[in-house]
Amino acid sequence: MTETIIRAKNVGYETENTLILKNINFEISKKDFVGIIGPNGAGKSTLIKILLGEIEGYTGDVEIRGKIGYVPQHDFIDKTFPISALEVVLMGLYKETGILRRFKKEHINRALEVMKILEIDKLKNRKVGKLSGGEYQRLMLSRALVSGPDILILDEPEAGVDKKGQKLFYNLMKKLNEEQGITVILVSHDISMIFSETNKVMCLNRTLHCHKNTSEMNRDDFKKIYSDSLEMLVHIDEPLKVVSRND
Image (cartoon, rainbow, N blue to C red; front, side, top):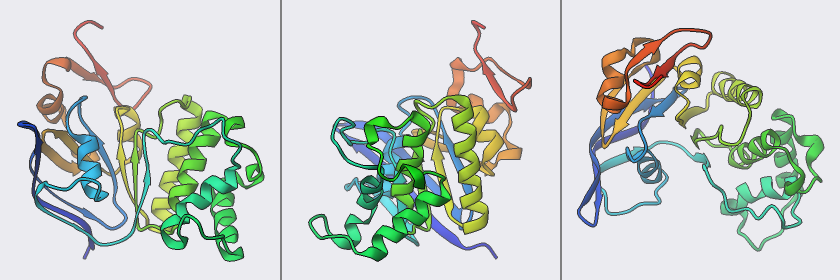
């Protein structure tokens, strides 16, 4: 029997008379690799913030069974500041150690171990401003993983990274999911990559229109969330492509 690690029941959220989320119900099982898709303004980032506990005042109930690691779409690290890659990863332990406390050898060893898994341990002393897009992406992932989360949430992690780098990154995600049992929740506009890498898909546009196995998705599911912007789906070199009326 699969273990439920996240459960949302009748979740809704609105602000200043603007409805953002309505009647959201879902369960995510341990070791799921879930892709969340939907148009701009669909409420994806708001849902993620609710799961992270960053938004209060929502209706309904959310149950989280495990520790969450998070890779945001935009971070607030000043790349001109002379901070090393290792120091950035150690930031992921602030909740455990406190911001002003010194890190112990065990913390540094843990950070280096995660960096080694993601193949950036040799960059430990390099300043963040000197990292490539793909290296920086893996650095942010290392920061999220160093605390040993059960759940990993990523918001548009492919932004600013070329296709080759994206593929390497998703391979790492799959390895973490399959070998370490980490539940992965991925928000992305890259539908093709979602369909090639995840095993579950959630279709969100204010409300949850579908939550099913990736292999069970069909044209009607897409029309529910993309409506007029979707003309047809075609299979070519990539697993899936969305084509508009103007193409």
